[in-house]
Amino acid sequence: MSSKEIAGRQINVDNEGFLTDPEQWDKEIANQLAAEEGIPELKEDHWKVIEFMRKDYKENAQIPTIRRMKKVGGIDTKMLYELFPKGPAKKAARISGLSKPQGCV
Image 1: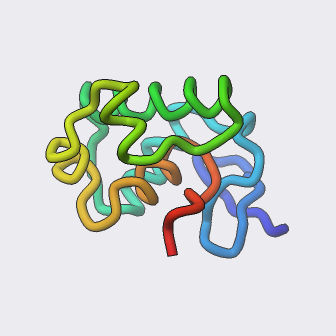
Image 2: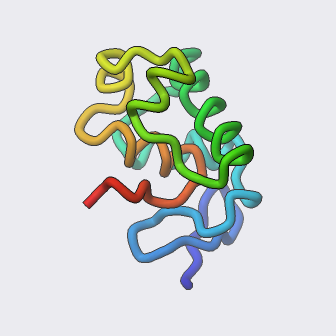
Image 3: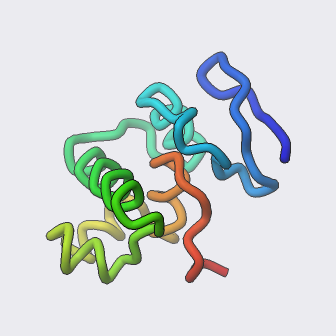
């Protein structure tokens, strides 16, 4: 395990930059990770996705899939791709402070 300075703190990350301890996450970290992913500002719809992912992970101990985000979270798939282009599940999980989703290769 390695660490990286994010939002002025040393945060534990894996070799792809995903947090290894979701408890180290906060909104400052999310904003910096979003900027690294090419998302200059997290808006209300971004936060809806992030909050759903974190809540669902806490309740089920699994990163929610895009399908679960749609069916359980009520998050439109097209909107998800617009908010987190070029890999929405992976980008959203990273910004949410979660590990890499299992379905991502």
